[in-house]
Image (cartoon, rainbow, N blue to C red; front, side):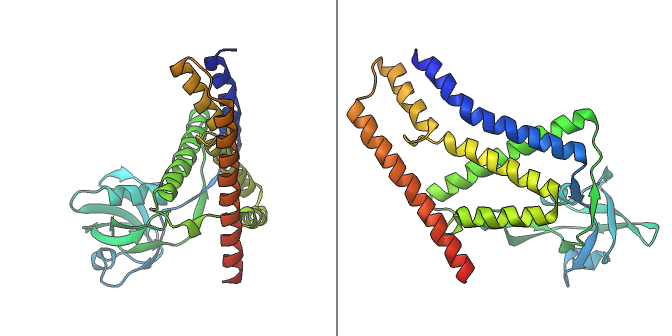
Length: 264
């Protein structure tokens, strides 16, 4: 069997994880996932939103003539905006228009890093609505969610390796059990979301160039492909043992962090 054939076989495992995640997200899309509505909750004092006259329970319908249906759409438009914004809102059944200019403020991203971001000083009211999707949108949703989850995990691992995210953020088996329990309490759709994320996570981890994983074996086959000879068996054995030590070390760190969180 040639190195190329071996590589394709080794890629089949991680690929199966990504395909499973896609079908899980597809099932979620068919069921109509709940998504955060653009309904304003608290308005910060002296913020652009308050100065413009925005109030709690206002519904944002459009920004700069672009229709808004979700909180995410609204947040992305605000953060990428240039200059002032014209907001079309619904308040007590009436349509009103407000103009404001976002301010750049310090906040944290999903990796708990401090970043600069354009904001207007509002929080969500926590109102959700069901996302109704066409067949094409259902496929698009499943694809986008799979790609987003994959890129998020890749980015998180990169930040962990380069020290941009502290090692204490790493979770282990206790975190997985707790999250599974929380997802079960929240309903079947949350369980599917969590299962899809776990599947993507396994796919990404399996691709890492660690000798104990598929990614490591792919690395050995690439070596054989480039240098026209197999890697030394002694080297393969030593690197594989080192890979297992690294993996068990990461598992131990995750478990240690979980215990600290429970005791904290």
